[in-house]
Image (cartoon, rainbow, N blue to C red; front, top):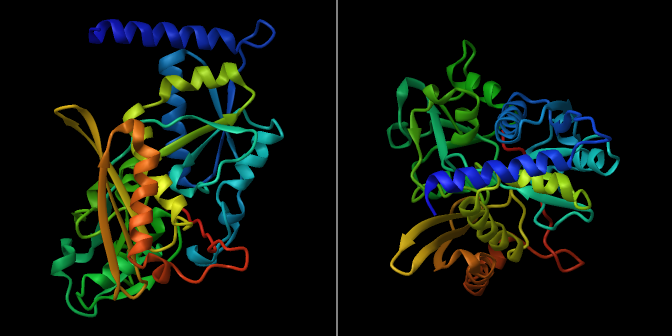
Length: 347
């Protein structure tokens, strides 16, 4: 099939889906639920623009305040799904038609009655350094202060053995950057997701994009999840035009890995799947790591397979890490047998 014919079929599919969600003969604007932070709004506007371009449907943004937005507690102390539960409640109450989440904020267990209708193309999932004087991580002097909010990043900075002082921080992207580049800067550097900086048009402040060999990303970092009600088949079909199969396969592998470890997105767990063309078709290359918070223990492995095997690849890699002692790094199971899960903001 030629690229032109693929594009034609894509457009025809979008038109049929758009026509299917007309209500009472009138086309109403779709209500897209979003957090009110600058990054969340930028992500949601991007999805709204893509859906308008693909289907011609109008989309209005509806801001929803989550418990995580109201809290100033450290990321690793916040509860499960703290940045998504209010959006999901709004979906269930029919206050919005669909929502856009930073995928790594979602609990690994699915939500009854809801459906991930699309996983759009992923932004660069790597971590980024913003440092005074344009420095790279290796150029920071001993005892330099490095701020970050994720236990995964804290653990990996310690594991590098650079004698840096890591400072746990909270806040949105701009507030973190100001702590390095602002007039009242109190940090030498911060580490945060490159995707957030790019989506906010702040890529110019990045002094180094960190190689995954040094700083393996969080599972699903840089990816978005477009979620709606599971019984809204017409909207599911409409939103499916935004789905990117290679990204969905990579995220499936990473989140299966995370779920099997029974760890949350702010646990010291890293996972990154890449798709590559092989002689026998596409292949997933999944890397995973579990690192102790102080960086003294670091278990890393990788596994390959086909996109159709994405979920099994993640489960198998997690099982291998557990066999090597990842359990003791992740902590003691709770009375119910499951480890405590913590989910944090992408910002």
